Image (cartoon, rainbow, N blue to C red):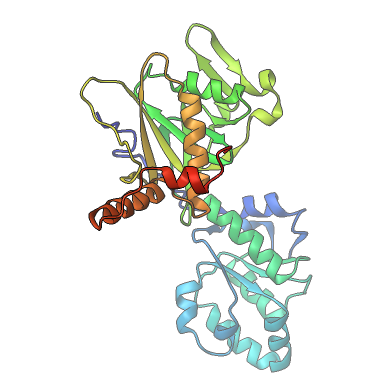
Length: 343
């Protein structure tokens, strides 16, 4: 029976971030200086990205229309250009740019704004700041922060564990044994990310899983209660977040239900538009789910390094069948004669 954890997900995405919060958050680390009034910090960031308006300053405004909603960044190149053209040209440049509402202007390298830029920002009540960071460093850090802040995210009923560096997301019906399997993995030295509820965020082509703050490091074991994994097993037993690479679906074993035997046929789950490998494991008394989980993790690592055991076995089998059809027969004697009898 297919599990429907990922059907009709409640996908969320933040739509804005107050510039005032940005200023407070990065004021010290970015060494920000505010040149306009604090009242100007009421604007909001609504798009990912940092834009350098060099082309717009030179008169090409077509691209600026599409990027004016981003942070406008002036580095040494743009500043020196403005310095070279003179006051009259700067008046014209910022008169044209004032037709668009940018959420914030930032100068890097501790540069001081030209009077014409300051006048435009004051007139439109747009925050104007400078940072001691380099242009590249400011743009990189700001871009990374905004990508995370505006990323799509959802929450699923599941458990996430780092097994040998592979992020394994466990799903299944209640009472199927997810938490017990996860606890056993932690006891064997693997790392818990979240139990019972996992927050999943899409960053580019990567799915990143983490725990909700309230249940971070906690796990519920039926018959025992709530335990703190970090306190019980140490700080190395937990981690804040992990890339999700495999979905493990725990299913109650049912007579007559078939499961993949060779590993040649792979199934996938689509989460936030990204396909993730899925492995279904039947749960039965006496079955070691933790050992199977470790095997899945190691096999995933092998595949990432270019080694596919199932495909290698299938290729060898097809070759043997082809050679047999051609009258070439191997009964294992060659391996005994020419291989090491001590292997």
